[in-house]
Image (cartoon, rainbow, N blue to C red; front, top):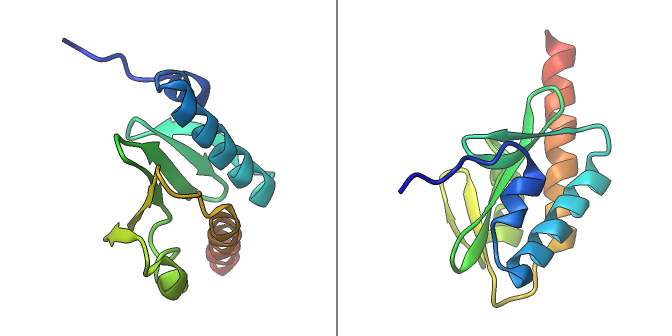
Length: 122
């Protein structure tokens, strides 16, 4: 069975159960508020926000929401993220716990600033 790749974030979110859709919508809005000029896209079959390069990706899984703030978004917030399961460039926010929207906001703002500094250096 072939699963259809989402063409936009609405399609991506729409493929999940209602309770997960609600969380994904809030994550999406949180990212929008923190990076109002970022453009939405699907990259690697995941929702992504782009502003002078990728700001963040996010994705839903069976038991968590994954946030990918490569390359330095996780390093800069190591302490706040330490209570979550994380891998290289990813962090997992369990679906059975409150989403850390304030932390997501901080990470996104950090990544927007980081991307801006990269552009200025060129």
